[in-house]
Amino acid sequence: KIKNNKTFSNFTTEYKNRAFFVLIDTNFIYFTLKNKIDLFEAFIKCLCSNCILCVSECVILELERLGPKFRLALRVLKAKGIIKLSCCHDSSIIYADDCIFQTVKTFRHFLVATCDKDLKRRIRKISFTPIISIKKRKLQVSVI
Image (cartoon, rainbow, N blue to C red; front, side, top):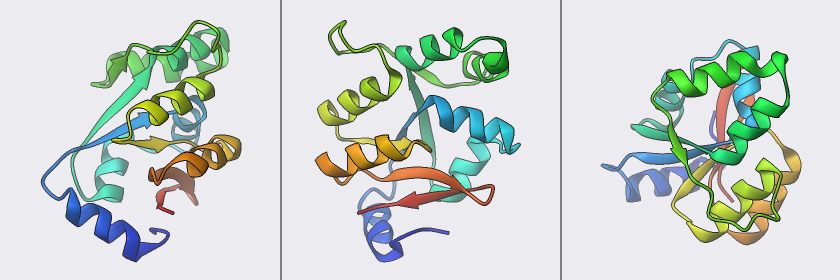
């Protein structure tokens, strides 16, 4: 299901022949694994287009810090064809959510995949960036 279908269809027709760049958050990776969702297949079904999955260095570091419970998520990120982005923020930012927020604020061509309500709220305040979340074991796109 796609929230605000008319707005999203305008968005997809504008970028019809392009691949979407999707910036993935830590909790999104965890919940896709928990719900047994294949990342690449789910994004293609949801967006009806090719997509390039990206993850920042801060997300990888956060997964490493979270310990053994998140090792599978870390392995998926390193094994699959996911682009690792180097962070462009100053060293005072230590949380992955702040890194993603700063990246979206700087580069507005990303879609953000997150289940974090606070991050969604912060992103909606600054831009019309589409946000992908998980609802009932399926990906859902919301565009303001």
